[in-house]
Length: 424
Ligand code: ATP
Ligand code: MG
Image (cartoon, rainbow, N blue to C red; front, side, top):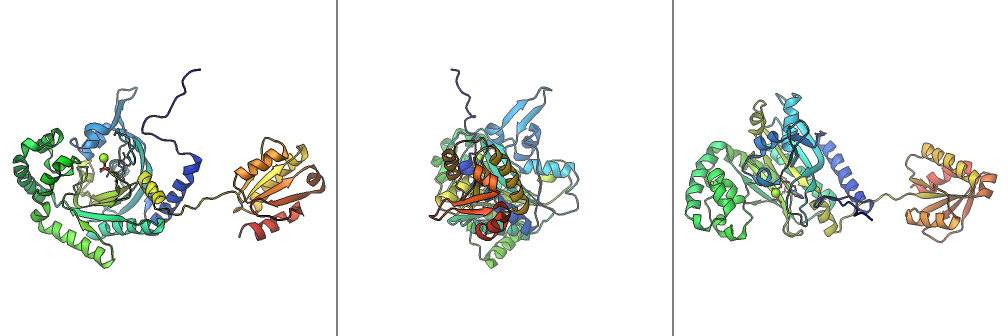
């Protein structure tokens, strides 16, 4: 026998035993977005490679070593999107929906990064992204954070800490860069290969290093917070004052620089200790320069992205409830006449009672095997039509989960019975 084909390493199927959790999460998110006045946008999974090089930055983990890039049949260089912000900005500029207006947008979907697969880190993973364009004020930064905090509450999540930092304006960052380089030069012999390279190309990125050997050097580095310009400081103060007033607690983490180049001013991450090393479940910030950098007009913007795999793992870890919708009933059909009658009756039930979840037996089978299927479907009731019931125009109703006499009703009385007794 030939070897069966397997899914690609780090890319996973979502099976029925898990998909209901994702549906629950997605329904919560869609409702939340509506409540805050955000609209969904859907972008292609594939974009020009250039888009990500120009936005995320050449000297970042993503662009340097994580992108799935290939040439298509025309020789065009394409990339499976590693994140959504760049595509969202590209779409916004292309369709002229960013200039001189406010857009509050969200999207979900798969992202692709060639990383070493491990718990909480996959090669195809899913993000919820939220982006707000056209608002320079810190109040929108606060709204984005309040929205995430509300989502944690609605999902029943706890133990997620908000870490906050500001990167300042480009000017203040450039001034700080010189000071940081001077400091890091002193430890040149202790830096790893990545950090040495970044010291030349993008020294702030050194602060983002995950190498434990560099931890103390990084912790003692001069802080950008001591070199902020007035406007960035006021922006940061306003954000903090709104969060304080709304009762959202946070930790200021001066080492939080985020792995993408386009951020300025506010950056934040929501981090949990319950998931091991992959503890960041949501990350975002302000990126006022990006729209212009990608060819649009100057447009202030802020947003965040959540890792859905990590959030769902956290919900399972914390025993959060996921509503799962099982069928109310499974219809068992014995004999040819019953099979036909049952299909028609099932359709009538779906016409009359749109909230009723009904699975109808297809493919025949003995009474016993159909009862087994009914049980496996997790339905509460079996609706039974055998040849006697088909002849008499009746239907049997059997409770599959509790001891009770089987009931027989005329098929015409079934709708009332189901709506009064079963859907409540
Ligand atoms: P990390 O430091 O964990 O690599 P990142 O800074 O690269 O994260 P972002 O680009 O900010 O991540 O993406 C936002 C969120 O998406 C992350 O906080 C995380 O929850 C999730 N995420 C990122 N990469 C992966 C991945 N490979 N697998 C699963 N989730 C991921
Ligand atoms: Mg990463």
